[in-house]
Structures are given as C-alpha cells and as structure tokens.
Length: 290
Image (cartoon, rainbow, N blue to C red; front, side, top):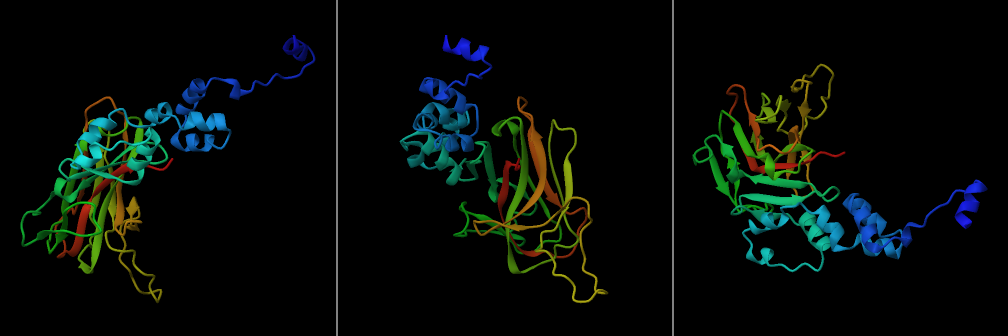
C-alpha cells in the first residue's frame, strides 16, 4: 500500500540492495572486476562478505588455472592449500610461477585477471644462441629463470618467440615486451632493429623500429647531430621495478576461439656493426592498459 501511495504522490521507490541474499550479491560482484570487488568490501559488511567469497574469486581466476599450476616445476606450489580463492588470485598476481621445466613464467594481471606469460631466453630462438663464440648462457640472481643469454658479439641480430594464442585470455589486447639488460660496454645497436608481432590468423603484423640503447642525451650544440630511429612506431627502453629493462615490441588482439600461433620477432634487416654487452631474460606478454 505504501509503495502504491508513493507512486501516486510521485515519490520514487528506492530498493535497498543489501536486502538481497548474499549469494545474489556475490553473483553481481563476480560480473565486475577484481578491483571493483575489493572496492565493494568498503560498501558494507554484507558486500564485504559477498566480495570475499570463493564464488566471486573463482570467477576471476582463469578457467584453466589448475592445469597451469600443475605445469609448475615446484611440487610445493601444486600442493599449496590457499585459505581462499582470493589469496590464490593475489598470489598468482604478485608472485609469478615458473612452468614448463622453468622455461616459462605465468602470472595474472592484478587489475583484470587476464593471463600473462614470460617466455624465457631458453624458450626463444636466438640466432647463433648455442654458439659459445657469440652467446653464452649465464645465471643471474636478479632473474626469475635459471639461465639468461648474454651476447658476446654478433653482426646479425635475430630473436624470435612463439606461443599458442589459446594460452592467453580471449577478447584481450596484448603487448609483447623484450626484457633485457645492457652491460656498460654495450655497443653496436645502430642501425636500429625491427620488431614485429602478429598471429597466423591475424590480418596484419604490428611492425615498428626499436631503439635498444638507452635514449640519447640532448646535444650540447644545435649543429650536433644525434642519430635517431625513424619517427613511425618508435619504441625505447623503460626501467622495470625488478631491475631489468623492457622495450615494447608490438601489440596484437587475441580474439580467442582459434588455435593461432603468436609470432614475435626482433631482427636487423641487414647485417650492421658488431653488437655486444646485451643480456636477454625473455619476452613478456601482458594485457595493454585500458
């Protein structure tokens, strides 16, 4: 009676969502994002309980997360008994796990829950990578992998990586980054190599010129000339929190549903100067911002 009288008097009726069952609120929260779920905890105790539920965070985890964890070389990880699905989600976001005999690394994008991978240097094709004269395999305490590839010297630079797109989250725009370091004596990365990223089922590869050396300082005088790469699709290294450098090689959209091959390549069009002082950890594939 009160609702009908309010409608006649032009007063809007506002329902209190907190009267809904907790399971219903959990279903609503699970249709948002992990970030929204954490925010929902501050709304009320009812929302907090719903947003913390295993049902919500199970939806945020990839459907194949158990199969991915089973690929980990750490037997202790596969048997970990996390207190909740939220703790498992946060662990996979903050602590990447080694999989596939320590050749690759898996983690979740914390804000979206999308799958991310790092292909180690051992899982890449590096031209002359097994020739000790040109490359050597070393261990570094800063690396998550047992081995990284250090360049002694080469004239021709060519690194390739590939993976099945079914390993990635569907309907997602991804970017590929080379993760590397430069020795103080690093030299020879001019002319600038070309990067390409694309899938076998894609329409066109993303191609650009990348500058592997650190950005050049501004010239002291106007008449001084500092070599620079072509202006179209330039990419420069950025410092990562883990102490490594990364450079964006390109982007691609993973439609999903098809078993396509993601192909990533960094190479010189023609042999240039002698290159040295370069360490490759791997190629990271993660969702783009926004």
